[in-house]
Structure formats: structure tokens, C-alpha cells
Length: 172
Image (cartoon, rainbow, N blue to C red; front, side, top):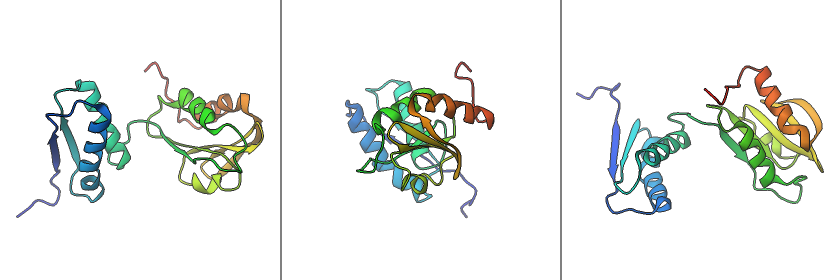
């Protein structure tokens, strides 16, 4: 008889892989479907060409992507379109620089006020282009501040996160 509460650890060995991108793609493909289908609970990757830190980072990234273990901030971003009203790539990088140390939060960075709120519906916080050079901030699906100058938006997002008790000191 199998114990239905038993945890399954899958270990995969990549003895000949020396390129990080190749390892990332191979391990993600090999392990992702097992985790998503509920056939595995944990993963271990063995690849002698890589440091233990690189392997651990990849393992945690795969577990995060499959929602098995959330260890870092998750960003939801749209690719941008004709409605995008600010520089989305630099906006996303700005938000990441200011919040990437947080664990377990989902932050949506969206290009437009039309589709952005729907696309980031499951995010904890949203940073959405509202007009040229203007950002609207969300807590969940609720608008918190409208039409903030983009230069002030990151500071206001950080203040919002802190005010809701979701901030962790990056030094700890």
C-alpha cells in the first residue's frame, strides 16, 4: 500500500551540461510537468559543472514557477502594446530593483489602465501606466493612488507595501 501523504523527491542528473541556459531549460522541462501534475513535491538537480548556489537558485526558481514553494517576489508584466503609456521595460526594472528582496509577493507591472488591472488581478500590488509619465497604484484589485508622476511611483509603491505590513528589511 502506498502512503498518500508521502512526499516525492525527484532527482535529475545532468553530467554533461556546461551551459547555464541549457541546464535551465532542460531541468525546467523535465521537472516542471511532474510538479504541475502533482507527481513530485520536491526536486534535486545534480550538475557537476555548476556551483551549489547556481543549482539551488535553479531549483527554487522551478519550485516557484510551479507554485510549490514561493521564495522570492513574483512579477506579472504585460509585453506592452499601442496602449502602453510609459516605458514598460524600464518601469519593470525600477520596480524589481526596489522590491526584489521581498518574499512571496506578487507585483503586477502593467502598461495600460485598460487591460492592466484585469491581467494583474491576482497580484498583491499593481503598478499600472495611467497616462504618459503617470502611474496608478493598486493593492489587490483596489486603486490606492491615481496619476502619480512616474518619478515618485516606486517610492509610493514601497510606502504602500510597508503600510500594509508586507515589507521586509533587505538587510535581514
